[in-house]
Length: 330
Ligand code: PBG
Image (cartoon, rainbow, N blue to C red; front, side):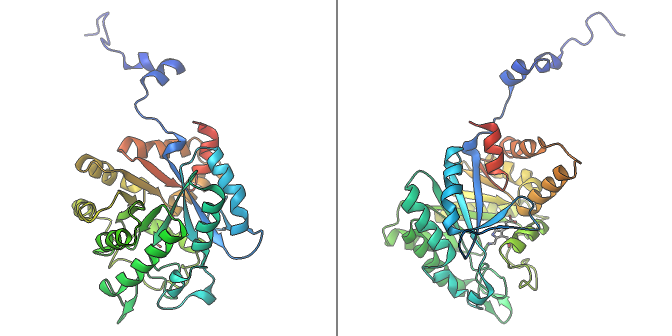
């Protein structure tokens, strides 16, 4: 029976006004939570649109000054660099990874020289931008070889550290990477270079636009299921993270983002290490296309980013980082 007291508790009371909603807000999205990915290309004064990622461009290194200035102005703490390597510089061994004048190395030097330690730089350690077959490691009888690839990855890490990279991000999802790379960094006096492990990276269908952006889409003939994780699995992600923490990772990444919020939350509950989320290219393009076609509202971007915070992520790599930082301002 309905009495005068119905309902006895009204949760809507704190939702009634904007000031009140702000007061009880449980999570917050700040510019400090964002990492901005930048695609690099050869050439001069180039800003090249990427068809599969509306609003995202590839930039030549001479244009990085303007972008990084903007990134710093909007309080984003770190950028992630991704090279679009010309096919002529790819081979089956990914040797361009060790060229100190490759795109990533030149970009790191340029940014560090200009901006010193006012911005963090992270770069991937994996061979996929440099191999003709598009895989992250060396092929042996058509199988991506685990142990044979470690030497070149160690060299790639040391080279990037030498160029001034702050955060080395091994991203090939193979075994035994973090310990070996940490050891070599320490031995070469790079104790302060951080390691962000892509500890939990799924063999995902959401990477398509990225592979287009870096030019590995056409070359990649098969999938990456024999090294990246099966998207049906959850417990395995805890084993991956436990191993990488033991080997010396400073931070771990979960990738992709939105379809894997359960994974972020579970890792955060189990390990008190910074967990980063990667809102990948496919997620970006879906949301962006939805907005461009007026199917969803622009605020869907903040909603998607806030969900990572709710799940427990410390930071989010997102192609929306710069445009959203202009909006949230703090
Ligand atoms: C591989 C790498 C991938 C992405 C970044 N580095 C995935 C892949 O090709 O397997 C994808 C990022 C995105 O989709 O935004 N080292």
